[in-house]
Structure formats: structure tokens, C-alpha cells
Length: 234
Length: 239
Image (cartoon, rainbow over all chains, first blue to last red; front, side, top):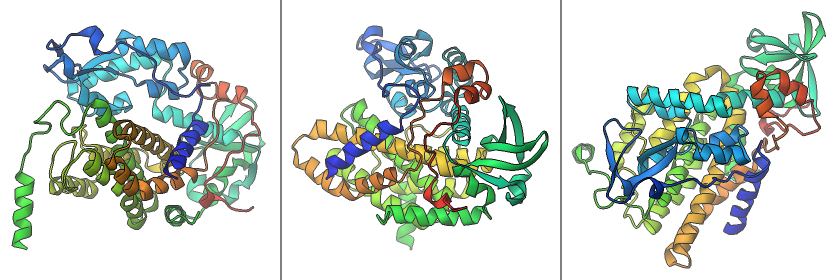
């Protein structure tokens, strides 16, 4: 029972996995044995003036391989990033493990100012070269995808859109379509002539949200749904 | 009452240096530390999301009570620690950790200088930061990012279980741990399967997209397909 549940978890996670053709796996890279010998002291890249024993050191990837993979860095490019000296940092094992795949800018906030600046600066160079996206950029891409793909779009007259949301609508011409945004989120495309937009062809997921009465009502719906999932009714 | 204050006072002032005994403290090695850290961190991310997205503590608690036996029995059966009061990451007493959590819940101001080695606080701060920074994107966070976090939790529990089985193969500790973790695993599994957004996204050419701006090429390359975009059931409505 337990095993089948876990097999199912693993399988489903693969189904969800994204842009790279292959499943995420960490490419091989040189670990501490290549850089130092037991007993030797090594400077910690994330702590000012701290030295650590070689056997307590781990090689960290400044920009995590997982974040790169999420951005579509796959195959040989991922191997190159895993071994790119500019992306490797020596640090205390515990810092490395707790850093996990925190984004560099989030991790930087946990460091002293000088280290934080350096982490951010170095990460920007690597992210730009390998075209690695931040979490919020990835999110924007996903929403554009949700807004424009799928077989079902629902026509919603402008007047039917919740007023507080309607006031925040913006439009951007993309190819032959005018994509409609709420904040940074693409929700569908516009219908109308020229600037006279009369309706939004909303992506399925956005339709109810655009016309929903209030945040409170949404929260209540979510609470009911999550409760039923957690209690095993769904 | 006085006894309670005395207990809290002593607990709050007690300082036990973390990992006094060996390099890896309560853990056998860094990999074991990492797999348990990731699970504790990620389950707290999901719990905090449940609270932020529903505004209903009972929902978040339901999740917490169901999954807590996983970490509690892990501490007891796998790490050999006595009682739930001891934190294997920092060795801080329970009262001190609860105090930090209450402080964060009241102020809602993440302290960026907090110690990375506290997965529960780090997770709560990360979620708060996301909600503080993107207040007008709350629906986005709750209806989409939340499900990504559930997926990460599924991966984390998968890694943890694999690690435990490798280390404890055939032991009575493993049997006991699996027995106690059963309900929590089923809850995580149910939540994972309830994710309405499990669709392949590989058709977005991220590289081309990155080269020529985030919008134009995506739409040109990515004409609407027949892939179903599923919305969360609580958003469904018949038009």
C-alpha cells in the first residue's frame, strides 16, 4: 500500500515535469576530494573570514541545477553548468544542504551584505549566460501558456468582469492577438475592433476568477475543497 | 501557572550548541540531513500556503496533524531522539521554536538574517515573503504556485522514504516508522493527486523565448493546442 502510494507519487511527479525532455537528474561534477585533502582548511564562500576543514566542506552550485533545469537548461548544457567553475562554491556542508534549490536572490538575503552582493552579482552573470529564469519569470511564462493554450476559451463580456479586476486590465499586442493581462498575469485574449474591446476570450481557469464576487468567497471555496481532499472525500 | 513560566524561562534561556558531538550531529551524514531537512521545509511550505490561501486555521491544522507523525516518528525511530521536544537541526527547545513562530505569525515580517538551519521558520518566512511581495497575485499563488509546492513535497517525501529504506532495510525501526507515517503519506498522496495542473509544459520553447523577449516568440511558437488546461475544481463553473 505504502509502496504503491510512493510509486504513484514518483510517476505523477514525472508527468508534471516540464520543459526538458528528460527527467531531472544531477549531472556528475567534481566533489571535495578533487579540491582538497582531509585536514586541509578551505575558505567558506558564504561566510566572511570563515575557514572550514576539507571533510566538512561541500561543493555548492551557486545557481542550483534544479532551477536551471526548470528554465530549460538540459543535457550537455546542464552538465556544463554543473562543472562551470564560476558556478561552484565551497561551503560548510550544512549551508549547502539547507540552501537546497533556493534561488540565489532569496539565499543572498540570509547572508551578510558583502556576501549577499557578491552572490547576487555572480548569479546574475551565470543566469544571463545560461538563460536561467527567476521563479517569477517562470511563473509569467506559465501563465501566458495557461492563458493561450487549451481548447476551451470562454467569452466574457467586459461588463461582466468584476469591477475591481476590470480596472486593472492591460493589453499587449502579441502577434495577431491582443493578450489581456491582470497585473503580470495573462488571462486570455481580447475581442473587439481596434481599441474598442468588448469582451475577453478567457482561458478556462481564468473565467470564474474574472467574474468572481470576492476574495473571501474564493478562500471559502478553497477551504471546503482542501478540507474534503485532506479528509479523503475527494 | 508559576511552574509554566519557570519552565518557559528556563527553556528560552537554555542554549545547547548545535552538533556538539559530531560533524553531522544527530544525523549519520549530510545526505540524511538533506533529505529530512527538505521534507520538513516543504511540508511547512504547504501548511503555510494552506493557511494563507484559505484563511482557515482548521484546514492548515488538519494537514499539520496528519503529517506531523511522519517527522515525529522519523526523529524517534530513525534518528533515535527521545520526545518531540528536541529539534535535530538546531537542538533548540520546543518553547523557543514556538516563540519564534508566534513572533513571525504576529509581526508577519520575515527576518532575512534568520538561520538557514531552521527549516520550519525558513519555510514560513519564504511563504510570507511571497504573499507580502505579491499581494495582488494571491490567486496566482494559491491556485497555481501552491500546486507546484505540493509537487515538490511529493518529491521530498519520495526522497526521504527512499533514503530511510536504504539505511534501515528490514529493521524494526523501519517497520514502526512506516506504520506511523502511513496516514501522513496517504494525505500527501491525496493532495498530490488533487493537483489539477498536472499537464506537460514542454511545448514552450523557453530558450527561444528568452532570446527574443518573453512574449512574442512564445505566442508565435505556441499556438493554442488541444492540451487540456484544467482549472482547480473550486474554480469550475458552468457558463
